[in-house]
Length: 319
Image (cartoon, rainbow, N blue to C red):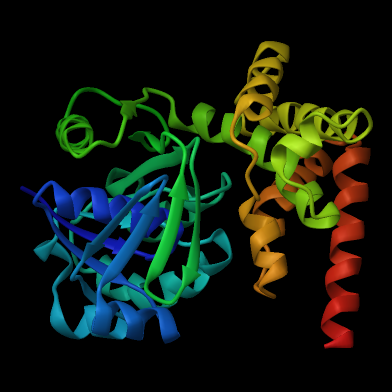
């Protein structure tokens, strides 16, 4: 059995924590505010399809982790925070993590989280990863909802090196995740996989937050599906700035995947409805920065990003 620190007990982190707890692993969760209080007082409840699971959990804020544990008390630290919280997390946990050797696995949206972790900890301690075909949200404090197969893809950052300790750990994690009911793949090129997910995220997340529509409504709408495809194509083009040469086959595969997935509210739409910060900079912003770097236009992403930023500003001012 392994000991995990899961940083960010939202819909995604809470779901994976429940799977690992059920399999007998030792899991410590971080959270804040009313959600943290509920986890400490009532435990974690996960709604997954027709099933409801409840577990008592060890939950605390970042300061509590620093005070109670050493980094190497854990076998792996799993970051499931929104990308908007990565910088704050590194300020609060970074110095603590720096003085250990524990590997850190990022399961976050975007392509910039692993570089941030690596700049502090070194590439040798970073495991890149992504959660795919999963929707997850906090329904109320202490209660999360998840849907979909909830697969994990992970690998050495930035690409697989010679067989060594990180590879052995990844294979152990894969086996333990699989045994816990989490379908898991180890990739030799995790940066490629992260960009493929960004193709989907940039295609539907900002537009869903702007329109209020779920993923199926967007991808099956005669006009909106053109915008989704356009934003996906711009993401494919942007990948070349990172040396990841996605192509038309990746675009077609990602569009088919999200078109045939459950009709879900994207995380960005849920965040907008709840008045929380949007992962706009780590999704659309990541695409726009790289397109600008290469001197190419991204009219679909530029337009949707500008409209969504404007709507957020107007909403903040009216509030």
